[in-house]
Image (tube, rainbow, N blue to C red):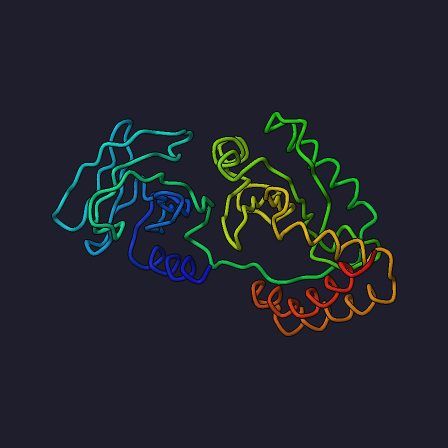
Length: 290
């Protein structure tokens, strides 16, 4: 995420956009199941004053055009899927990108796709609110929307995180955990189905996350996490169930959350990281139960 913060500053200072909106776009190129190169950038359609030291990628129907200063290269590509001007593709990737001895055929998969407003400062403060009894109903609503959008009724969907624990203060964002057949399935199915102006995609922490917003560039309302069965992410359900069944421990967690929210109000990542030791300790207790 720090990389995107640096990119955001560059976009604000060095590139002129015809309007305020654009998209972050990240790619990871995989060869034989291993990520060999990454690309981090932004949609510059219609933009001007693009600095010559930046690399520009233009995806056409059959080729990727790469411009680096005065040098222009053309690479044939095969789309795995394409929608709204973005998608995932296969390409013979040159050694200077892949670090291999010869060009290798890579799957270029999205690692991020998110809208941003270049005209305003980014804000994502940590703000806790009292438990809302409507959160379980909101989870059911979002779960139905996910099933309807993806079109697969066999997916296991769980409400987890603080909004799933009765009485727990939380950021007013519903966390949802979806069991998927594989990450390959999710790239082919979930990303093109879910991503739109109000739902972005991020790949981090070894799993996939979609951030649903109330409206374009508006506040978050739902996080949709996806991982196959057996993934470490699913251990979070043991933590949830332990706090549901142990009110005194839930009270200690609530007090910790308030304390850390004051310390890390403007740093969501630091707030989450500061809870790690506590979450791991309680999860360990939960997993020891018969």
